[in-house]
Amino acid sequence: MLTAAILAGGHATRFGGCDKGALLVEGRSIFDRQMSELSQIAGEVLLVRAAGSPGLPGTRRGVTPIADLMPDCGPLGGLHAALSAARGEVVLLVACDMPYLSAPFLAHLASLAGASGEPDAFTAVVPLTERGYHPVCAAYTRAAIEPIERRLAAGRLTMTDLLTDVRLRVVAAEEIARFGNPHQLLANVNTPAEQQSLEAIHNHEV
Image (cartoon, rainbow, N blue to C red; front, side, top):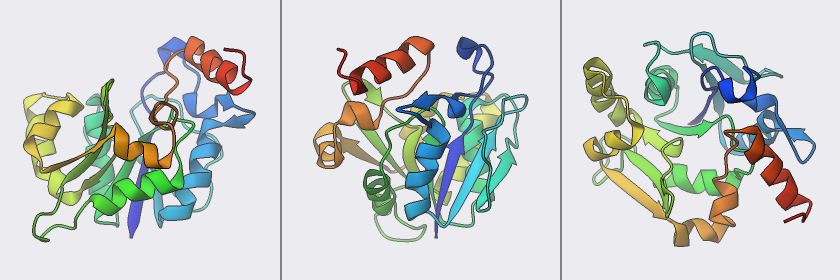
């Protein structure tokens, strides 16, 4: 079974505290867009909430809300909660503000992660573009739990630093391009300006 985990994020202060998953891109909420893709490939979808964060709308059968086991640890804490709760060996982690993720691309990431005990298994499969690593659109296996717990205990919370502790499979831009424009696939909405920019691109205004 493949488990998908949507990171609901923190307090969304740059959006006035509103839920980024509810933001509309091309007339549909990011959450609905993500669920449309994830439901094609994942047997289980987790919704990981940080303490005090806004919840995503439209929770439906097949979506399980969970909370961070270790509060205030950011995305690394969310990944730890997802791996700990998942029924599947592989967890496909996605941030809640990425509207253009596609099922074929996500399935490819998950297919490259090996189950624990397999020879030459990868613990993390992470896209890499000229903008750097994208660790919140990536696949991880249960083998990552131990190094994550060590980092959480030490207060070392940077997601990209975790990649030095695991057997990593990098998915470069050339490989990502088989599934579409890497910049669009990995686009996220951190600010209202970025939301407007995505809409402008869709409407051919830029």
